[in-house]
Image (cartoon, rainbow, N blue to C red; front, top):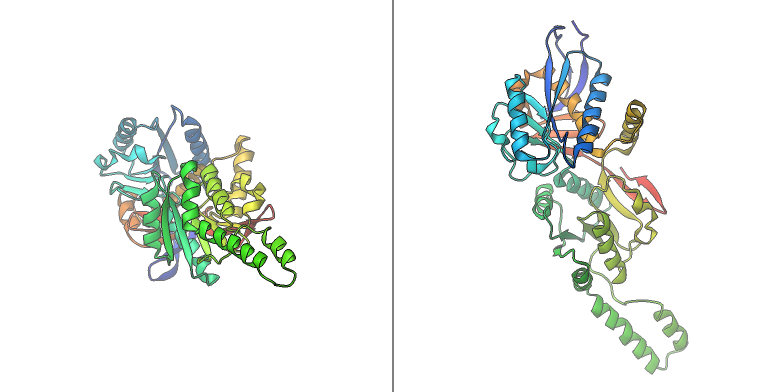
Length: 384
């Protein structure tokens, strides 16, 4: 008999301490794993397999058995591998990694899939989205705005493949919107759009008009006043306090550059974006600092990275951390119910604490309680 295990588990009506029942030594917890083991994404798959093995080692219970199968990042191969897992009597599967691989999984009705995707729209009923979805991120941004009494926030959403996921996150979080805009990520069109959003030409004209007015006036020290005005780009207040940019990487930098060009300064207006996974390149972008974003718990992630590196002599991927936590989640839930009934647990409201932080489970979706960070003076600072 294995030792009794005690964990803290949150359910709808409050916090309760659960004492798990003993499990016989020959009772196995079988977990399927669907990852790309071949093809262009095989390195991601290898990282996840290593993370899962590390999680099993840290749990230190030989009742857990992991069964990896290849998806090759293709829907047909994913279905084939899922069927093989079903034939082995497996009820719960970590994976697939990518949304595109979920296409046919509704045919595997006896299996529950904990996918690493952060997309939540149009999922098969037996697929749980375990990624850092947009609702989790906007919930955290909402908390920051409310704590700082920020009333007027504009939302900039790129016209991209994840546009509707972003809009769903905004809607689900019930975040207060001052104004919202969709923008074209084409750099030749972006700046013009940002000019219109920030009323740049009007504010620029205000400056030129003021310089002309003073030049024609009899005001004292007018040359000094003109000289000071010529150092500026615009005159006129912006009618918002913060801007939330739902973008990443170079596209995010293009938007912030356009905002700077139109004389929107991050020291005067909050620049907020989505989870950047601690992108170190942002540390050197001092002109757009401070910039704020929600993300997973950095301290826990650093601790995980050390464990992973010590075990495999390489750095882990962010997705591997998700899979690491999911092994622990399945293990603990296996004490609460038979794995064949796991889908019912995911429909109820439950909460679990992992390396990422606390995540809430309800209606076949996992929402993460994220932390909030800012980058300022080349330093990453935790806000909450």
